[in-house]
Length: 243
Image 1: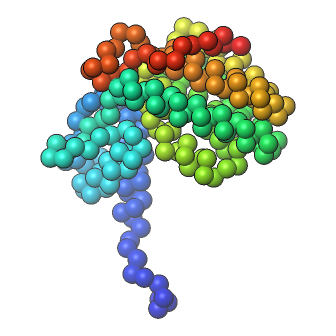
Image 2: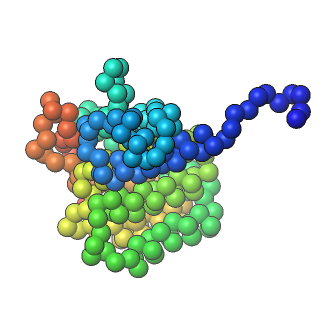
Image 3: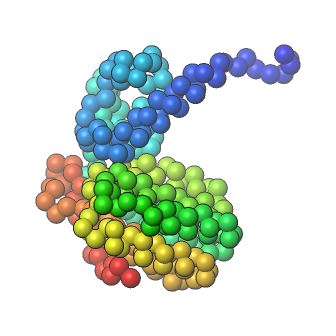
């Protein structure tokens, strides 16, 4: 062993905590655990067949992603987004999406465009009659992920990664599947890709702002009061015309 190397721990613990993190994140963003539900370390550890250490590490990381709240002497619970939370999340996502499009229009390659197009074509071939909220949110997140990859901007992608899980959770739990989802998702995203391919930065900037605002407005319910910490209407009016 080289003298300059520090004492390194076994990698199995890190890998195990990553696996626990992935499992917990997936079940939360899919809506499998209700907002506000308590997450008890011992119960999770028993169910997953691991010690409490990896579970504890995963919960800390999920707090950093905005999916879990850790409360002193009370443990962890799944986050409940308030009206203010949802508006802040929408505005941050919109700003990041606009910047991603600006960079993608400048730096994206044909391979990047092919990757995004492949997601759209996969959706077009899918059986959409049984589309679930989780599946619909997955389609949308994969598509927008591909735009951030196409931006070729590492700091921007890291900023997106910070809010990505919470955006995914928002879209799934607020029932992204709507009556017109199958009819509107494909043409909207084909238009999005066309603007990128044609490097139309100004048009893309306007479209993505309307697109993100419209997506959020369509999944926010009017009957969820703010004082109960639930999602409610974003203050900004919608003018998205599904163009």
